[in-house]
Image (cartoon, each protein chain N blue to C red):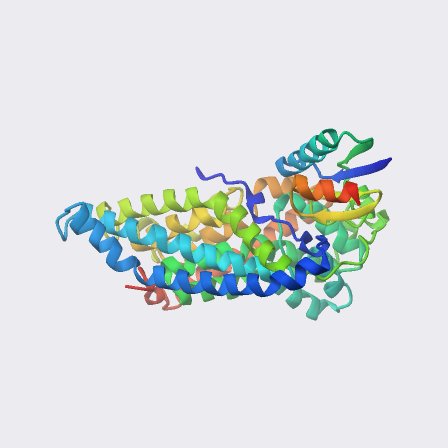
Length: 377
Length: 78
């Protein structure tokens, strides 16, 4: 993938809990902070509502393009979608940041350590959405989980869910393809993570984890301070600064490419090679996607363009999951803690899960759920 | 003398974290040792699950992000 964004953009601090702040400052500024957030959200909404007329005005009045031409269509698409996606991303990432301040990896571990396998698997999938995660933290996180007594399958569920089902993917899918597709992605992504982890858990492969893992003594980072709302809001802003600051360029590039495709590539151009009738396209895109390393921000505008030109929904979903869930660098990192056989099973099970999702959505009559240019239009 | 430990397996962010800590210590002109730990077992033993993480005299002050110079100053001063 040309878009080789660092996955580490997903990791912003969760140390909000450990930030010290004077008690006096705290009481004084909490009210002001909350009020400022309220004002910002209202302003956001007022601006968001103006995006359609402004994009139309800029295209037809300011630039004087002729209505109905390829160029005008592409320009209007770009001028409307870019601010729309970036604004949605900023708003959602802020709230995700605030929510994340409640779910540090330490807390997630505590929650998971006390649970049985079934409840643990479900919780691990769900917590994967909100717990901050970065593929460069995969190894310490896995170690931290396993040494604290979290079952192997549950730990792996978390490792699949955390990168695959993330807020950037969901926001972009919602913005570009509508809430139904975002919902389908959320639920099938969780299902793949949970079923894969559960399956591996039942294969009893604990002895295929490197021996030193179990000899590692897990430490405790000490009691956590509960962050106050000022710290949580700051953490949300920090998350926005870091995630949006890193992915905006990929979003804009992706939308630009998408706008070009919308304007110029003929409809159903891809139907032959990525359409429903091509049964071999699902395994092909998954095999291409698994070793690839990209993030959701770079993927989704491409996905949207593929769908628009006749690619089947299942094929596209499978491609997207394969690209953003597992990658060669992550497999290499996990090799330090998992023996080759378990790595193989891990990759194999996840791949099969993604294949099933691909075929399932190609068979089900769901293509109509794709509501392109959703939202304000 | 304080010991500041930076935990990180060697990604970009971890190097940046180490850099900021070292610069701040130097700028403050105090005596402190900055140690970099990139061994995952030692990280987990210290209770670190997300990197980069920073500990001062064995107490973890921050995990999962790059510290700000102001924060480093505050930890060292306190």
